[in-house]
Image 1 (tube, protein in one colour):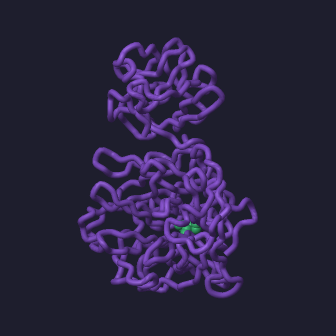
Image 2: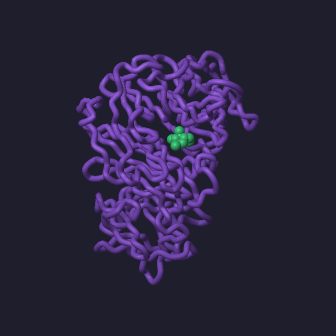
Image 3: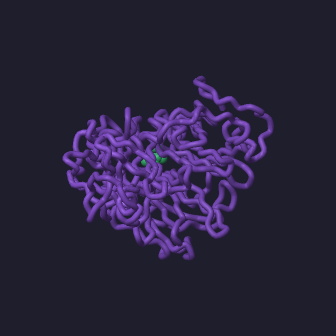
Length: 464
Ligand code: AHR
């Protein structure tokens, strides 16, 4: 295990670190700036989670597919420049000497466990799933040991495993090729009896059969679990790892028998796909976490370009990206579109009209409901103010012309001064260059004086 030679985090009192002691022992780097995508360049398959020690942890595939890494940060934004520790390197020969893919870090049974896929030196694509373990609470400085291979019913292509707990059961969910089924990989679920053995025969959760699952390769991989609103959601990735890569979603009632195939339903359509508008291609291999305010966050990788030279698997530019995860009225996650480069976007709901949002359709700015992506705007901080950039119109911004609010070039007419919400100090308000405030009026968005309580409420936006 080695620390990258670059800037080192000062680990004061690096002796035996009791749990939570880690938080006191590490001097986090200077407070990072805003959360800007891509958060970490060239880290595909990123798993990000917030641990009980108060830190965020990130691991993921590196372009060389030759090592297992961890980053730790007090904030999501801190990952961009965080120290990266190599906790294990593949051997130069023999077993596990092939491609090293998609690690996941989990804490259970009083130790860190990192699951990952590995090929062999002579057959780098002979991919099986293994685990390493660290008994120190400090995953960054502790010693890691190879536990061995995860035993499943078939000795076949096995990858992208995750661990989750539900109703007292520790589950293992992974992707594998099953003899007799003509696909590259399907998803499986089973209780985990020990770190390397299953507690019972696995249940096959899904086989890629839909057109958006079988483009280039017949793939269901990279399961990621989210338990919310009385349901267990498993997002997964499908198709080839180029611009056709996308997310699908399985759903089960949280009280159902998760090991019963019939408990699971599959979305007939993908829930996150490439976006020409936001310029993100091949979004996939996601994980879920919460931000510093406890709000759900989607972590995924994607490229900034569509056309790839050669095998996409060896294109290094699947960068780690994050965006907040919202929910539809029925409680299912609304993935929207991949948000694109820049500050992660927010939604702005008038304090006096909950459930409605600032929204942009082409050049029209209004307040209402409608597709998530039309309501996501990024606050781009600049000299003297902020610009509100609709994620579907990168480079454009809300601007004031003749008292009307439209979308156009992000110049002086688009610069707002952001202040605390005029109605009681909650949320935010935006003051235009002419001194008026952005506010909604009969579904339209205008700029006007906030002379009375009604106007102040109409000019106050709650950020989510
Ligand atoms: O990134 C390497 C592999 O490519 C991952 O394990 C898999 O999810 C993807 O297809």
